[in-house]
Length: 164
Length: 99
Length: 116
Image (cartoon, each protein chain N blue to C red):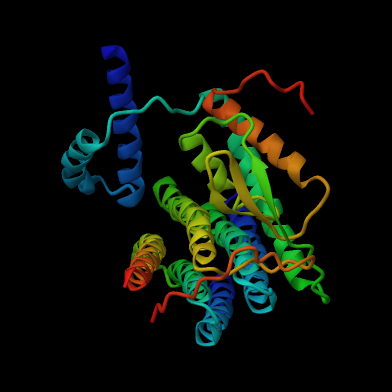
């Protein structure tokens, strides 16, 4: 137990030190202020919850998320620049399949806003209400694939992938 | 050459923020206005960063960082305020119905 | 090497600009709040990201480059969470999303809060 607590402290201190280093643009004089602030902030941060990213999954997930964001920007820019606005806008309900309640769902709801064509309208107990700017046949499938990836990222993937 | 390029880019982004001002004037809903404010703050951040690079004023990056923080707070403020108004509205209506 | 990086950075900044323009175009042309939210969150965040990346590539030190990326990260998180917050608020205020099929207004639209 204590081992995990020390690990959490080490992570926090490293992250905060990196943050301070970036904020102070690498000025060595800034550490006189920075060190006490870092230690106090690390002490004030809430204890780590049960939810955390799996490191290996995160390494493959982040590039994927950036790629999705790039595609999302390109798609919406293309739609906005089209001469005739022909949008097939719909509101769909996406039932949760893998993610249990908690931060993982919130993460997916936020990420959907950057993904091509989707905007989270509302989170509810058993479904996600999604505004789709331009509906394509693949939209529900891509949501399902994204949920599966996030489940793996949080390490909560269940082996229900046999269903279509 | 990059200096001129960045100054031109900053000017373009400033014009872009003008579109946001139009949307604020036009509305039609307060959510639209909030959106336009967000557009303006994003543009302002980009302008500050470009000016900071073009004129070699690193302090402008700090200003941009502050703007980014304020943009997040502004959205949260709008949302909490509207929800509070909604709740007040509903309770007011329920009270009116009770009579 | 530095020369090459400078060119690359400037190119990234130039690529970022059209996304801002497209985002504003969407803000003007799209039919309702929700569609405009799409345009703004996706296009503008990407534009800012490209500009930040372009400037970070040319930054004098690693710490300064990290600072540019920090601003991008902050805006990424703020705008993606903010988009859902604004959309949920608009929905609660009774603004129904405009869809080409049937106007889905099952619930009677409550009147808008008078947010001055």
